[in-house]
Amino acid sequence: MSDRFRTEYRQLHPMEVALVKSIKTKAAEMEALFEQMTAGREKALALTNLEQAVMWATKGIGITG
Image 1 (tube, rainbow, N blue to C red):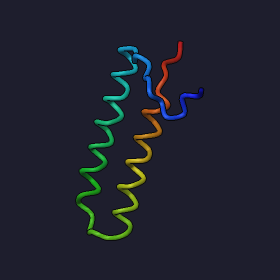
Image 2 (image 1 turned 30 degrees about the vertical axis):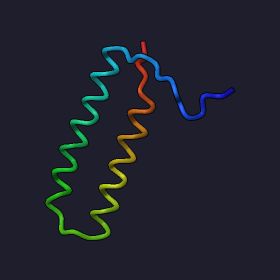
Image 3 (image 1 turned 90 degrees about the vertical axis):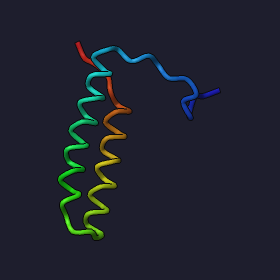
Image 4 (image 1 turned 45 degrees about the vertical axis):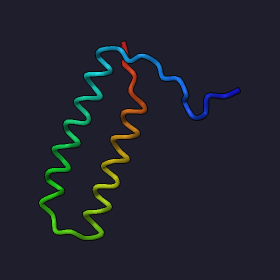
């Protein structure tokens, strides 16, 4: 049976945890900038795509070396 829905997660290396935190911190900074924009479709799209970028970046975390 495949683990398509990831019922089990692997333990992250401390360097991976630090990278996830850094990505989320930078994303929060971007979100704060976006909040200065006038409400509208463009702002909503920017926030949605920021959320997606963080999701995919953190899902793809792996350390090299």
